[in-house]
Image (cartoon, rainbow, N blue to C red; front, side, top):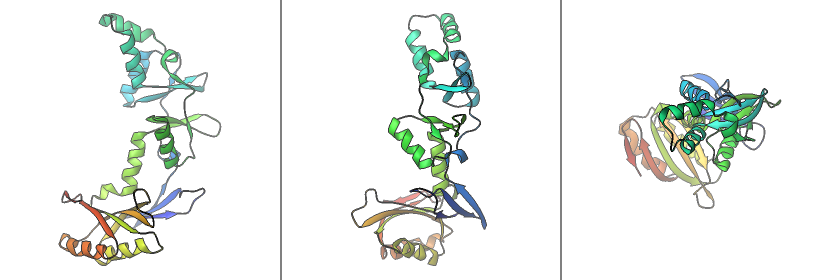
Length: 252
């Protein structure tokens, strides 16, 4: 899977072209293309028991809470556990069951919830989750209507897709000079040895000034050529590590 960034609006690319088995596909880096939809919601006056049932049935951990067709809050599995534990210390089981059937979601939900618009990029959404230390958010359209939910699990799915992890293959971590053509020099070497790129990710984090770190996942190479490939890469860049998912070997 060859991944090529395409220029989009704003600071970050919003679309990626992906070639898989000779067929060109598009990966759109917007929340609306990765969120869980339609959103599973709950009414503010429903009971804790109703919320527990919905979470379990749909295998999810968060519910947008609606009141008069508008978003009023969110309730998570943690909110339900916390409310149950705080009120259950001296109750018999039948009393506890009665309690959770009577407590309304409005009483335990988080009000004024954080949301993201459906045209946010996934990296903008990841920043929101990280900043506010939350596991997910409702997604709203331009009218403020809830159209989906995006969570950490969705971000993980995106990461797996973008890194080409499903191809298994070999991942090289390298450090190259921050100059035009430095990454191409390494990818040319990989192609010369018969390898195909599944993904290329790059960052300045943890790299010294004047350098950048690049993470290349490749596949299709004869394992007998690996040592020669490593030496050829070392002539162009600093090799940080190699992880071979197929052979489950690591050189760090």
